Length: 412
Image (cartoon, rainbow, N blue to C red; front, side):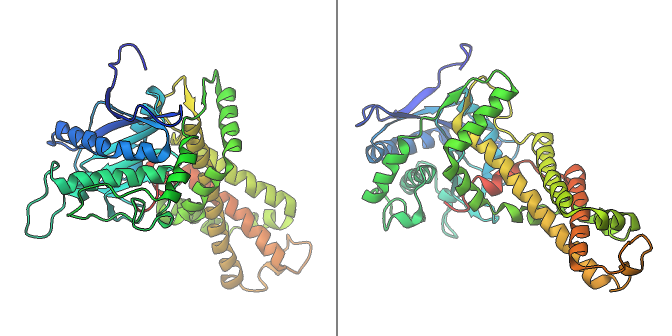
């Protein structure tokens, strides 16, 4: 943190833990136009104060929460949690913090477009809590105020629940405790206990939270640190990739898929493309496809600035590096899925639309017979062109969509 910046206020702390480890959490409020940021900050401070002692006792490490300046949103429309990642990763690098908690009054939506009270990203170590769902009252009754007892204790419970997810706890790990699937209870007046098995798991993971840092002096040093971070944490990256369903991502990006399929529908009826595909070796076709997928992923990653934090900092933390590695690998898998999608369309056209003997009568073919392998290879060649055109012409509708679909869990 630069000397010109004011020291953030210490909201709450469990100063003494059973170990010497400490986790620093940055907290900031993102409020809509016309909202009172002071009330949201008071709610956030109260939720942290209600949650910190029990959570610190369960993890056996010291927790400190610092309140950062609030952020005013442009409007009160619904938000994806990934829309707060820019500020969150900036605070992590600038703080530096091990985690970031975002409290907002804007409606929060999951990847399935469902309104949720909060979501967490274990990989990015970012938690977003929305007060909109917590304040909602039964039909015919006024909206609950932020200082309402039910809002207070459900907010603290949700906070502990989401921080548990950041530390890799799951809903199935507890029965009736704080890590059970969250639901708002009007009569709640305390934070549910932490299950003993969950506490033991959290204690183990919390000890790994203070991440390694690097001060790279160039692109090569930065790349090496990212690669080393991924090698040290393959399980975390693989879990994020498994949860992302990255190969299906093109189905959520119609602009990208359309830009990839549209030109191939013209190319597939071009004699020149068939000549190249038929005379290309199998190894050459495979390498061309792999190179096209990799180049397309790199182009989208750098052209749309999908790395975190957006602003360059002298310090790069390990979990930020893991986020960048995961986003890039998600793009590679997404482009692979796009390749398979276009390839499937090409095979259908080749096998169903084209007359069976049309290609065997072409004068450019040395052999009169056209086998299935020839059709597969030609379809793959045309699909590689589609992937490249999709990345160059289509791209992503929003650079937050990848982070939204891959980094955050789908439910509280």
